[in-house]
Length: 215
Ligand code: AP5
Image 1 (tube, rainbow, N blue to C red):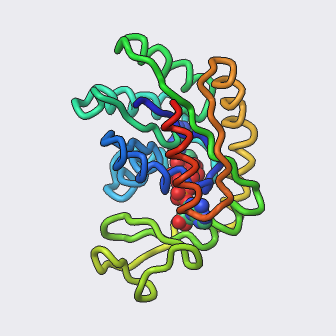
Image 2: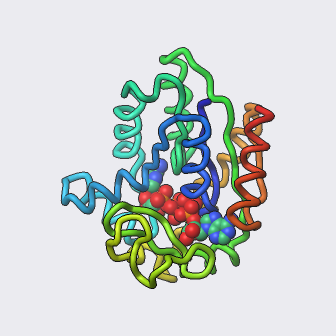
Image 3: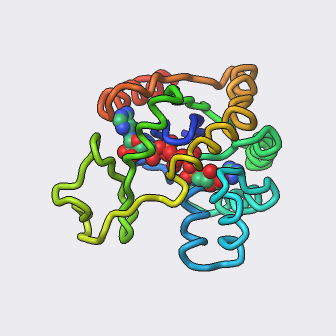
């Protein structure tokens, strides 16, 4: 299964990618996670990416495409992958088409998780991440058993810098201007499947697996 996940920031792409990755035994590749890990490790790429991410803007295509190019060459991508947060612009989608052609494989599906802007703003304000293992939580929908402590590894859970309200509004604007056109792009190729993402995590998971089962 070769899959692209589309959806606004906070639509639940990362949450559902974890489920799909386990079910289909394919790697979950999140460009956002790759940037965050580079920021944490203080790399040159991390320093450059941080300037854009903190403003709610997209990291330039040339930096992002290089990362994906290297990642898709790795052995674990031979039998498939989920791209979460890539492509995010038309030039990124065109690059991906070329890369898949050169690998002589096809994209199975572009899965779009639709959630309204109002719900997104509610979700982002409650999102928390473990500072140790990176596991995702939500203060209301997916709380930790002990407040502020990760259920899996015991490290502190923290809020992402770019989840502050003003940055979320800027990320939504960027999404509507630069990423939403990809919905038409994949629809024209006959690859688009849209799933309603406003239900709870479990029901969305069922809808996602059902939609992919039909692929
Ligand atoms: P990235 O990390 O990709 O951010 P994003 O697309 O904004 O997506 P999020 O990770 O914020 O949300 P999500 O859809 O994965 O939702 P989640 O499952 O966490 O990118 C960050 C930044 O990096 C970008 O802004 C950009 O600057 C840069 N970047 C990344 N890729 C790039 C690219 N290709 N080109 C250029 N720049 C790039 O869920 C959100 C919350 O809701 C969680 O708390 C979760 O627990 C909760 N939740 C999930 N599902 C449900 C549900 N059904 N019901 C209730 N709560 C739910």
